[in-house]
Image (tube, rainbow, N blue to C red; front, side):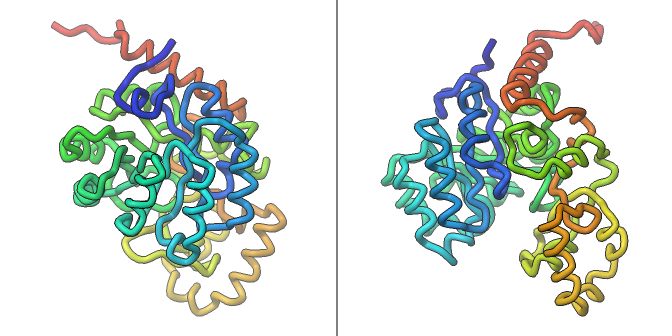
Length: 321
């Protein structure tokens, strides 16, 4: 059972499901597993650890995968893109920041350029800069993002994309989300949190269990954890995480937290190292409501495709006439 779209044709995969390049969590093993399942795996290059990236590219072997970067991390370490392109990935995904300095090198290497955007204006700019695929990321997504919701953003980006394939991101965690994305005009979906809660994902077991137990009502979008990590992003970007004792204590008191940043950052670092998620953040999106187990990544792909296929083939839940 397959779902064919322009995205599957371009990426040369069976299913229009892409693994979000979650920092550290989306390693070589998870990316290769998603690709083997018929989707498209993307390693999370994140903020740029060259030795980690080299190791995970080796771990992915000969799997047809991509590599995703937070774009401005490459300004701090220009070698990162070279390290990735030396392994001839099928695609490079760029999120946040100016892509123009990297376009020529990516295209010259023969890789597709996937650009994640959060506004229609950003979509137009990405197309003008040669994006081969757009990822329209709604605010429901885990991690850093903007303010627009997926449901309204996706069709607006599709209309502005001038034929460039679009994948929806943010809140897609099962076959219903994939089918909805396709019905909105997208060619597929980029999926993060659902793949975080899989057996192959690198994340701590305690974090995965919190995702399974969580409700989307209990997520928060803020800069609190960026302050604690000494890595505050420029406005208007904030990060969505699961609420915990730390966020409940400091939410609405960001200025005060900045005044205590040194002490709180030290406490936060200790919590991350010790797996204390009452303080450390679990990065997850509003789609956690649809996540109730921690299966193999292949099973996630299979379930999503089966459910979406049934929905797209027709439903007897409604009578029209």
